[in-house]
Image (cartoon, rainbow, N blue to C red; front, side, top):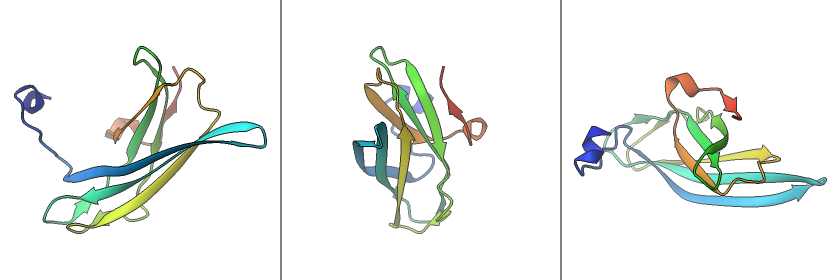
Length: 115
């Protein structure tokens, strides 16, 4: 946060989330949100892929629901490599207006929360 406040864009992970696609479908009468994308290694050395954290935000930016995704199907990425991910949520909150995605902190891994 300190570097960002000074105008520096520091990427501690050496990874980027790219090519996001969101789809809303109804299966057996239930709404489902599907999120797909890529994780890319933008550095010149191998990188471990951390879990991803997703949050659905309400109209005032408040967090309505969050979940994490284990990305260990391919735990390391070589320079320039990418791997894909997909996650689904049944019955997402009706008030959700935006989606936030970031790498999960250690204390968030494995959590699904609704305030």
